[in-house]
Length: 199
Image 1 (spheres, rainbow, N blue to C red):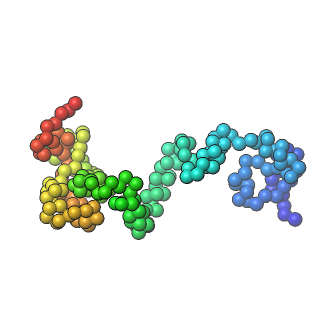
Image 2 (image 1 turned 135 degrees about the horizontal axis):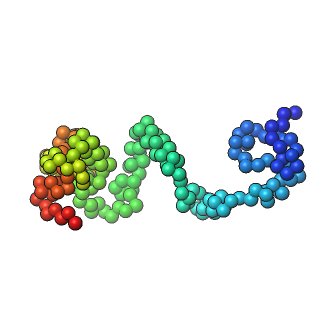
Image 3 (image 1 turned 90 degrees about the vertical axis):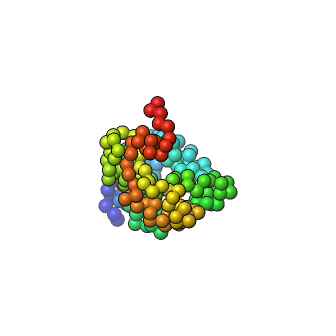
């Protein structure tokens, strides 16, 4: 016979439970008092809401329940590590939601230049350029910083005959940070010949 390691919450009778059960359970009860214990430890409103959401087809049982900042940070770090260690899975995942497979696909009517600027590679490039320069390279301003291609995206597309996003991803010149410079929004507008409105 196994050595008892917990007690019934109602009658204090010694019981044995496996270690993994002890970690998960909120209470322990013998067979005779199980129903009483269930009434004593009824599910909380939060648990009932989770159960209700979980029963709905296609919903996440945690949907709508606020998560703590520490939990969000841990999840974010875990996701970054996983995708960094599994680049082939990341590529496969991307293929499933690109082009005709995307739920907003409308026959390929997006402007290719604008489409390239929405790539994750573009966001990473912009971040690296700003991190390197730290301020506007024209006026020294540290507010409203933007990354600017010295040799423009349209010129690079024309020189390399880029016609789709996959070709853009493989073009090293597009993502070369030496072809980038950090500007404040005002200077960026002036260089590109656009009217800047501070309001």
